[in-house]
Length: 91
Image 1 (cartoon, one colour):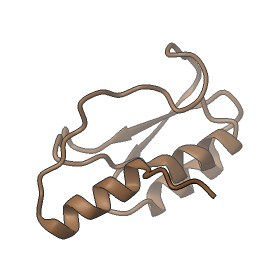
Image 2: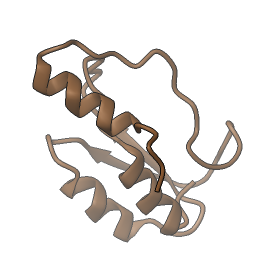
Image 3: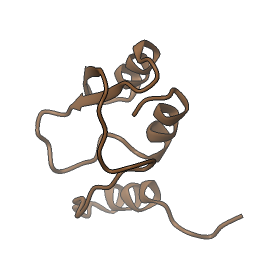
């Protein structure tokens, strides 16, 4: 078992301690940095439920496009949702 802290560990600790956390860089979790495919839009409404439901409508190679209303104070997609998307074949 690894003792390495993940991004969700760090984010959860910052939230609990009231420390502001901002993403400094974004990179793909899987594959190449460029992608294309049919877009599947979804609006983030505060939980991952809408995003998980959208994954069920995605076909292989689809691109999940998440509208988080331009928020910069949080990341609405973490490693667990990225893994679910990857397993669903989403680009």
